[in-house]
Image (cartoon, rainbow, N blue to C red; front, side, top):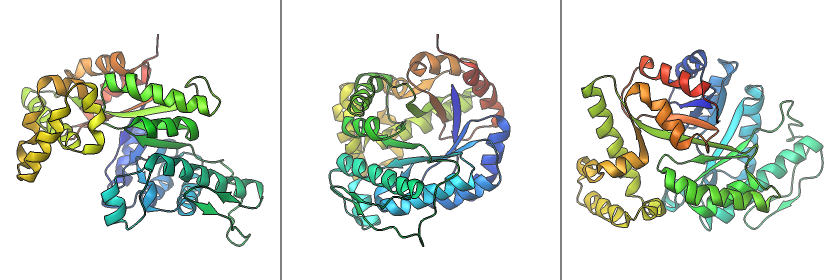
Length: 339
């Protein structure tokens, strides 16, 4: 199994990427938060040589397809073929109010977006006239002055992030892989996400998920001491609660019959009780969303739960840790092979 790492979205990412490469990680993913991940990943590309580099995620609807096509093409060139374009939709409030960009029918818009990006890349690769006219995006002008030409490393893979079945179906149809949100459970992944991905693959003429990457950052609660374990437990409960308060993620809760949890958490947020959100996440919920185990048992617990589904995994630990904690876990995961 390929083991990746999600690094911080800041200038420290350069050192983190070099450390991850030396430690044997296969991929370095960077979110889009306080800084734009593309220039930071360009820096990482110039200072690493083997590790994959990807956005997880870049906000698609904050940019038009031409801008994203250019950025991804450049990163693929700078990294000599190691770039992975991970895209996500974000939510309506951020697209409308933070980025001042249009929002509608996110799954349908994302399908159009990816097809537009692929059409732009095809125009550069073949030299044919750019002529993409979709429902939401239209790109019909590309002159030689602005055409970078064929990328010697080919196009980067496109991976889409999503939670609901509509976006999962779109990913299966038009993308090369799927980025599973950390706010997921084995039940939801197997009963909702994978069937939707297969529906999308079928629409694209494929009858299975062969060659299609499924990547996930899985919450892990572990620690070398009781105090470390308690701190990890509290941090992960708090992060799960934050996601559970988001209405867009309600389908995951509904799969388990936890519909009322999101409403309770939103009421607490309105009352400015942020520090108490994690208390709502009981042990059953924690163990559904996270692998909870002592360090020597983490890899076995994770592969038992997700090994037959995931092709790439990252360990999500929103709490302070040391490289010594993760190194043996990563080694065991790298050596794991499906039965």
